[in-house]
Image 1 (cartoon, rainbow, N blue to C red):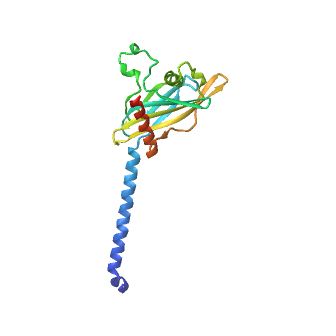
Image 2 (spheres, rainbow, N blue to C red):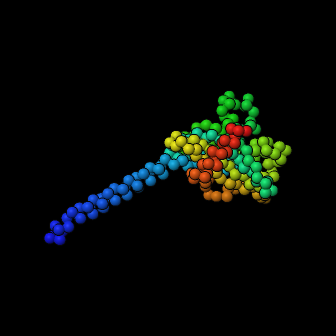
Image 3 (cartoon, rainbow, N blue to C red):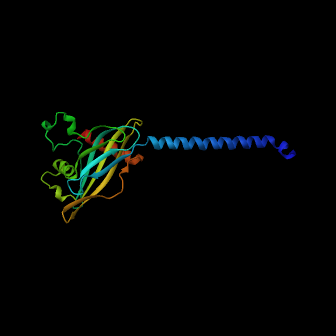
Length: 204
């Protein structure tokens, strides 16, 4: 007891530092949990089939709504790579719909909602019409789909990308993803690349 009495000031400082450390740890955990909840999660997946008719589905699995700004397709044909903006569904006639906005993939997407941006054949065809007219979609070996969006809680752009390979199968061609889920574009380098893509679109 005498030792405690002699060193009470030091012990009080130590207890204070320990309490501060505990509170800082709690604060870090709370902030980390909040950031995870606010993170945008965009899924890009295949649905309805496993061939060229398969639909490319974009889902917003984050807690906040997003606004899809652009869909960019990158094709690989015999080792050569080409890319184009395929946000608008130009294979569909404008007169087909009462609402012209149904002809574009641009627009808001609520949490838990999904959007069909067309078949993989459509995406390849939209790209080729812009960069290599006359080339058949059957020549495509690989297709990368990148979705760029604006979120409601961040000034920076967000996005996701996923690669799909196209291979000959017994019933024609199959389309398969190369990863389990889409890669989220969260790093500074990824966001710079996304911003550069949109800037190139504006300059075109």
